[in-house]
Length: 431
Image 1 (cartoon, one colour):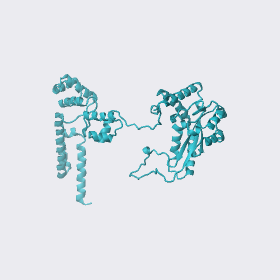
Image 2: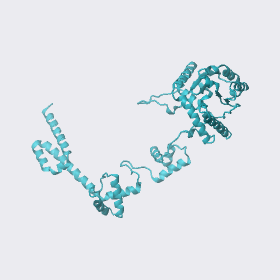
Image 3: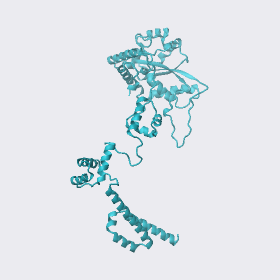
Image 4: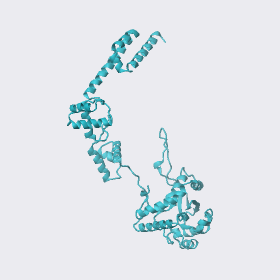
């Protein structure tokens, strides 16, 4: 390194050192001007002296400028909430006279910082404009007024399904501002729930079944654990895909895709049952199930599926199925009357199953949704893989500790809430 460069670096280091010491204590600089000038004359070269003196003059000018602005009340000084409250009270006691309020404030609170008279005026103005809510930040001002906010709320009242984009276009505000207005009013967007259609004639039947279930449970707390709930579900290649929560994290958009439509289709009709903590099945049924095939399944396959269920439970077992056409055939009802006398639930049975009530069947409100989530975690290439995933998914569900245990508790709660809403849709009241 050359001598000139080395000397220049030393001068820069000396200037930096001096600037640091200038900012250590502004009070020391103001009280020791002569000492500082003496140090500059003795320690540094003329170039360093000139540059340091320029910094010193600039520092002193800034200090005096800030003091003048503070005296005029133009510089914002932070006070505690109690101090702001006392300022406003004293300003009101002085009938809006800021100078008198400042004098009275100094008498009442001699140990506090004495604000300028403009501060009293500013505190009162903020209270009148924004109330007890915090005022706007010092950055961009809010782009809306009270009438605009009322307009937004009127639009939501007229159409609760309106989008924030439509509101933004109607009131000519940014969409982010519309979101802030709605959140301030504690309004949140809720998704619509898909439910089965219910007719007025279904309400009393649902109430009757839930009332019967609750009475039996009160007489025998283990009764629900002895009901074999059954159902069939069709598993296809495409399955049911909920893309709302499907995403991939990446720095750039990877262009991820999921196939929805297939030219070559296949499907499997699966039967399952739940009794207590036992999951029966899966058992493959014909694609087009009729009464004859269903009756053969009940006579030939169901007893084998019940082998793992304790004998005491099988002796007092109740059988349940919905009102599908294959379930209502004459030979099926005859078999159930013989195998489960006065102990089966279904259309035409001793206890009628309410039509259009999947929200009361554990397989509909729990098993099928959980199983399809496991089966369709990735694309299904062929029928054999589909069946393997169904069987593997059932094994996973059997291994889950609280899954089947919570089903009985959930059914009791659903029956109770169904009675509270007089047999109408109730899933929105479960949360």
